Length: 403
Image (cartoon, rainbow, N blue to C red; front, side, top):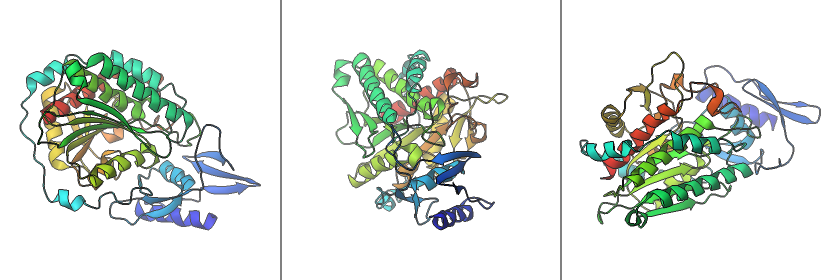
């Protein structure tokens, strides 16, 4: 096993890192230990209470675009994530992208902005109160790790909150157009898909707004409140959904809100959903991911980070138009690398997808995410008014592209 681990770590250094990766696993008597971001953890020899995670399970992992996937254990995945490597765990989703060439060959275009009155009306209903209350609860679970019992509980709470918002905010006619469903996964924390059906019987191209509901600590058995990553994005798009219902938004084409499971495990939930859509031959007009929307680093200007690598350039340009037209703060171009969030599986399937983040990537909340310190009250840099700007953007995205 040691030889195998060394092989994988050396492979990582050739693919991504410029410096050799030191051996991170070692034995101390009968105990195995692992070093993750400079901290030493005992590797449990058996199942841990409240978790369904086999650290020796082999997984097939893709580390870069076009690279053949490699086999590695769940423990090696954790160590790789601690080294800053981003990847797709493709074990159950090897078919994703098999028909992407059919969609990539046809470029999607987007119309000029035309729904200013409708967007402005919905934006006026947005508030920081709901997102704050929701995030207080959502980040109170010990962890939302996708293979934990509390990860299942947090997903069920989110589902109940979405159903509550739908019941309280949608008109009777709009309720008849809405479906709220769980997309089932074998690990037990399910993705959630809300669909507002469109009125056009012909145009079935879907507009998707996404966030990931799970959280993780770098050592996944430790607490992970995940307030920013990605509790912030999850409640941001929930508030946008509420605003659309409050203003009785009846789209022409279908609009969906997705809360993905298992992003932190290698984009597992979004891969499964995207692979299903691809296999069913479903058409996606545009997909936008909201992952971390709360942090404004001290000493920096408040901005919306627009990811410009591994995204659809045409939809990205359109997203910037929305920011300029409807937000009170500017955008900044930034990069996050391969497979950095749940837009990536949609891109792999050949669908136009984009990613918007809390600011320039280098100014994001790197010191607190994936730790027990990713909390609402960790710093005044955590801003609900900043999150509100992203709710505005999500509202504009849904209305302008859905009508």
